[in-house]
Length: 273
DNA sequence: ACCCAGGGTCCTA
DNA sequence: TAGGACCATGGG
Image (cartoon, rainbow, N blue to C red; front, side, top):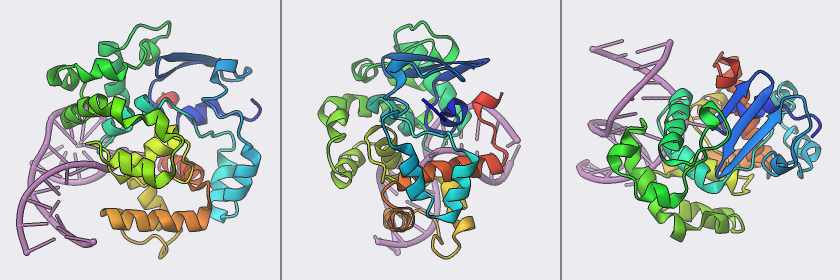
């Protein structure tokens, strides 16, 4: 795929089970292992994951109508939105709540080591992501041993609800319905639901607002995005404003703004280590 | 010891 | 509907 920046895409807070050795990358998506070279051609199996079928130029052109987004797009051209395995994505962002990148990474890696099947990969990619049924029958003690803290109970309950929740089925449902279903799962609030929908359920109008995005929006758009997304009503008002400003691919714009805010703040991604 | 982290839940007014 | 305490835990 032309113009793909693997490093920027992997290191933009979407995925946490990737390992880099020099220019070689390995990553886990559900029960699949992706292996690719930073400068080589994209392996066929990874095409869907990197959204190779999108008309990316057209999408970037649309969100670049906003000058701030346009600048972020120029700085991170090859950053891609990724199409993740829904269950892994769901657990990932339940685990992410009120945590940090480093901890999310470690927790998920330990979750895979403890409950996932062995893969050919190394490090964080050494085990596949455990299926719902496996996590559903894990003990809270085992889950907490992975460093999940109070989120351990949410993870197990979400795994138990997975068959009825039918995440794959939600791919074909509209945003409001998918959102409502997700909010019925303990540990999933407005922000986590938006992450799951944007990163795995094909809802590019989902607009996750975490602390970084909140800060970035207040900085770049004083007035339009005043206040904090603390209450659900306020959160959805801010998302509505984002859709007005950035259009139907607001979630994609969010990813560029998020990446840019983190870089400006001097944050270090795992790939930089 | 204090604050923050890709927040959510639950209780109270 | 809006605040605010509380939730584990590692790192700065």
